[in-house]
Image 1 (cartoon, rainbow, N blue to C red):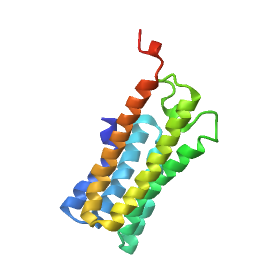
Image 2 (spheres, rainbow, N blue to C red; image 1 turned 90 degrees about the vertical axis):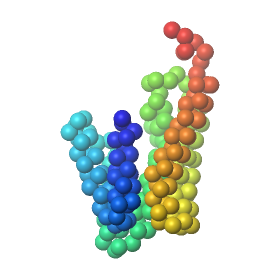
Image 3 (cartoon, rainbow, N blue to C red; image 1 turned 180 degrees about the vertical axis):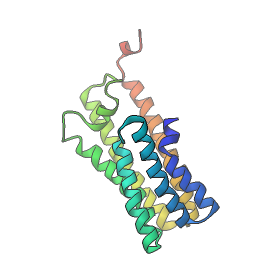
Image 4 (spheres, rainbow, N blue to C red; image 1 turned 60 degrees about the horizontal axis):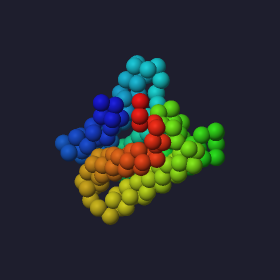
Length: 180
């Protein structure tokens, strides 16, 4: 259910695009990120960092898309979000006592520090690649293909990467951690 909530703005964008055009869909995603942030605030009295970054960039790049009437801005937003996440994961290798992925998952998994670092670098590389792939699709395919990629491609690649990460993590867990 949380995954659906996280992807609510993208799904709303996709549906609006299929029913209208990129500019109406951009307006819809702007409203959707505001609603998403409001729901998070009402439920938790907090808005996640990921939602703040992504939502802020939707407001800026979506606003520019509508103001200038140029779809390039909203297409770039996907890349910039992913590249910021890549930078965040990479920077966490050097800032703080634990890499970002360990901060996110470390309480649930007993792994050695080198494995956390390797996994953290993998997430950084994944987000870097995802941003580049978004630009490749935006520049080399039709607007409609890019919109499909924005929902199905990005979501699919993220789920596949997370699944592969889970398999890799399971192979690295100490043998005694699975016995109760």
